[in-house]
Length: 142
Image (cartoon, rainbow, N blue to C red):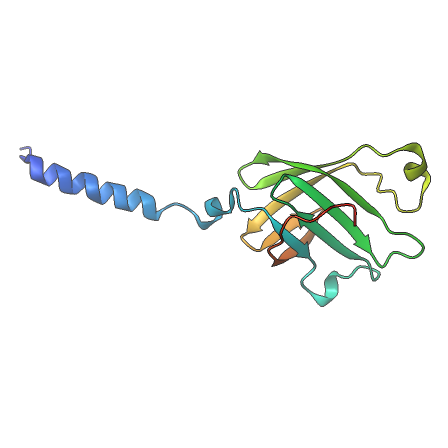
């Protein structure tokens, strides 16, 4: 006892399956490729000892990572980012010269992982940051 399925019914089944499969795409998949922006803390409790983390991701696959309000120092690193997986970026700081390594502003960790939690929220070094705004390419030397 098999049901006889005509050609028109098969077309409707294919169309239904197509729409059903498209509706199951998770929202996080839309994050891929939309990395550019300025990210910082979002909550009052996130300012650890007054230090403020700022991350600028640029469209040309460069970044600027800064720690602000650090006494007697201005730690920052610049470099390139690359996609590690669907919603993860790997930040690689540029090589530093010897004098920079001896300065108070040197960040010894030269690679950082960024995980996109959603379109406006990332995790960087176990800190949750939010996208404050879209940014345009700027000179990173400022």
